[in-house]
Length: 329
Ligand code: 3HC
Image (cartoon, rainbow, N blue to C red):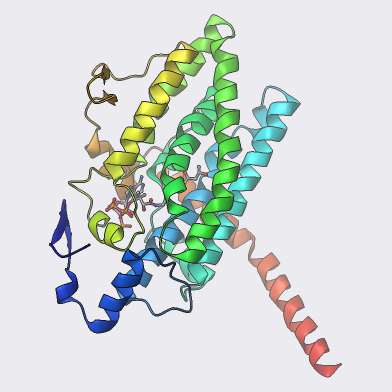
């Protein structure tokens, strides 16, 4: 599969001829579609890439709870409030599955969280935008969770067993997240003129940041080629971004809303929507920590970690006491 040098954008991968025997045997297992498990030999670089991606995915789930938490007390009905609470609770669970998958690679949760709290580890750029109206709860479920599903379904078939299996459960719950978001947008779009305008405003603000969730363009991606060779990434950033646009534009039309892209047009020949240029300066600016909510999000996470220290200490003390009692018995 990799006889020729595989080049995608800024990253290139080595051919099997350049690999040591154990790495060549590992790559042959990957190419044969064999699932890699925690106890299997793996190149350090494969392990490092997975720790990076899985932990950042987990951080995204945990930080992703914050924008929606902002609207729990202001949900318009008890039904919407309980649905939103269930979704936010799911995201916490997704974070836990993913931290557990990352721990199988020999890294501790405390190390991973320290990397998040110090700003060393990333989380998805999308969660650095403010949620200004109830319609944002709809736009996030529809666009953000919708994008997450498109990105996560291939991960159910990725080469690393614990990650792939965590994704199966996550994707089942994400479909509910996307449905409840679209249901909010439908209710607003069919509501009063003010409600429809609120839905349009939310689409205007969340559309482009949702496209950025899929990462930089393939030409700019530094990790894609290697992640593709290791079958961590089964589709490129641009392929999945295109899928999101093709799936979502007809949904916006059904709502009677306008996608905020004057260059958007359907190409009957290719069967895809062509869309305008993404503002990569904004993307990189948010990744540098200069998004609208980066500081607030990290401050909130660090504060929660510090305020929860007593609870973690109590759990450990209880576990130690329990273990000591068992010892004596
Ligand atoms: N936000 C923050 N950082 C991003 C990013 C984004 N939207 N897109 C790319 N990056 C970072 C990458 O992490 C990488 O930096 P690093 O090397 O320091 O980690 C750099 O930009 C270059 O990007 P690449 O495309 O080369 O990097 P990857 O191959 O890792 O691809 C990715 C990026 C597509 C996000 C990939 O990491 C991935 O598929 N991750 C798993 C899915 C995920 O994390 N989704 C985030 C949202 S989770 C979510 O939405 C939860 C839902 O319940 C709401």
